[in-house]
Length: 316
Image (cartoon, rainbow, N blue to C red; front, top):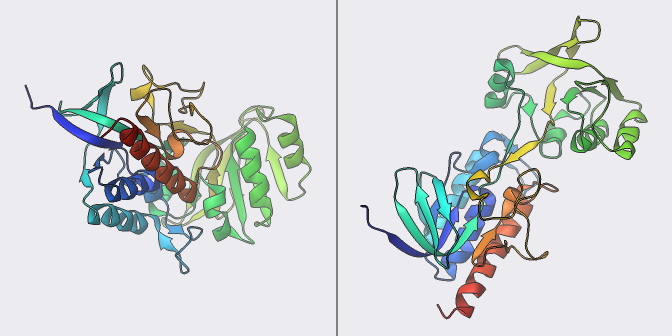
């Protein structure tokens, strides 16, 4: 049986939330241990340019920013480990977690910063240009700026798809919105806003078959109208996917209160507390509204401060 490791603070997941929590926890002498998870650095590692994070006047790439945050966390002696937590037991006063290789950790406090993963269509062509950073994105607020005065396509039918289409319409000359069914899933007010926007063209019953490009950059989309079986090509330089996010919270579902889509619920609004004492949440695992690097970092700070106060109240 492997040795049980006892620690003061365990941070599960990296990204702006996890690393900011680590910086604050380490400076408070909580000696945090971080498991980076499946995607070290989180969603930002799939983002080429980050231009909206304060303090970077010339912008920075997502991966580079994550490396800087990791270095800053390590500077204060955060124990950053690769690997992920596959099982937890929050039933007692000691929070127990197990890594993928069976290592058991008992932590006084836990900060969950496992984030969320954007859902994609799963097309080979889509993944190709996503990896290259050549025109596929799941965040209009993050990347819309790069497509000013260009034509883009967005896929989705819900409120966030309508919101992103409307956002893009202010920057782009034309937005073509592909909706798989014959109606929006969005609320009437959001759907009406999109319908009233002159430079948004809505195509119902339409599915994406392929993202077209020259190997480096997106040049268009091949789509099919399921009502007529008519195929068409839509010229565009950007392809936005707005079909939702999946919070990476399944491992906690037996102990932590989640909403109907799997996001962690705050036990007390305005704090990072979950329903389990000593377990806190930061970033996109609980945030389906803003989903920005800067808001994730802010909640990472809150979680570390809440964890520090929790330990102080317990006399640690």
